[in-house]
Image 1 (cartoon, helix red, strand yellow):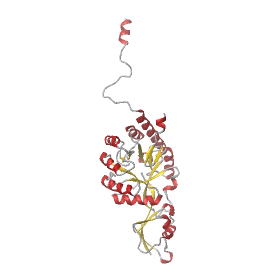
Image 2 (spheres, helix red, strand yellow):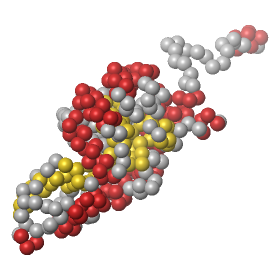
Image 3 (tube, rainbow over the protein chains, first blue to last red):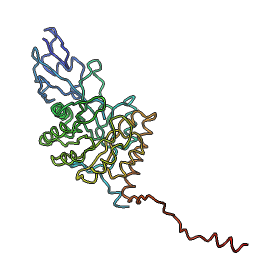
Image 4 (cartoon, rainbow over the protein chains, first blue to last red):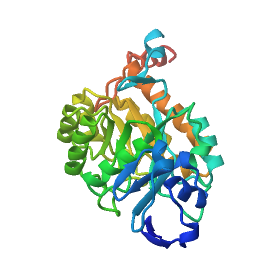
Length: 69
Length: 267
């Protein structure tokens, strides 16, 4: 499965491809509570992470709060 | 002094006793940042939104900011136009549930001057979507009025360029905004020393926002405390009613001399 995450293409072998957004975040060691996700330009509400299926070719933006003025 | 004790900052439906807002950027470490925030007495702290650093997945700023103590104010820094700012504001709300946003639209990275046209466009839409909008602007009194008219909760005119520490270069224009505003005015950007913050408060500003001057001081927690005291002093000075300035001198004791007559008698 091919995903574009934060502008970078990532290829997942079918055996270990994350089925849902939650699964992807777990694989990336990202704490769900701290991340906001957009898939193909649409914000995914956090409660829906585990029920959001990932499909080949999706563009994801994973964003979080950082230091700033 | 009852009126001074009850001097609370009111923004939208929230009240605060601190009139010093602090940004979280540029600190040497999260620990130093946390210590500085504590010393500042600030209740409102700003954060930005960026892509997750996939090489550092565990690194997260909110682990160093106690959300029970600080009111988080996400900014839209990085936005170059209204669409990008709106997108960031919506992402921030999805990230935190907070519907407050510091609206920042800065297309030019060299001076980081805010784009007033795009800011007004984004503000109007975000207010309609239920955001409490705190727009960062150049000290443009007409723009400030327009933002007020579309429902912004404050206006935040810059003192001088972000991170420049130049101080109150925009003083005259800020004074006009202060005279005409009916929402709180927060002087934001370029305040480089505690005296600058005190000066802004003495003009009648409702609050100031400081980041670089604290974060990049030699001793950030000490500087944070200095800014805290300066903001309190400036505010109290303004409330106490500054004495008028004049071009000429005005002696503090009567000039009716007795010295000339004393010398005569001792001849």
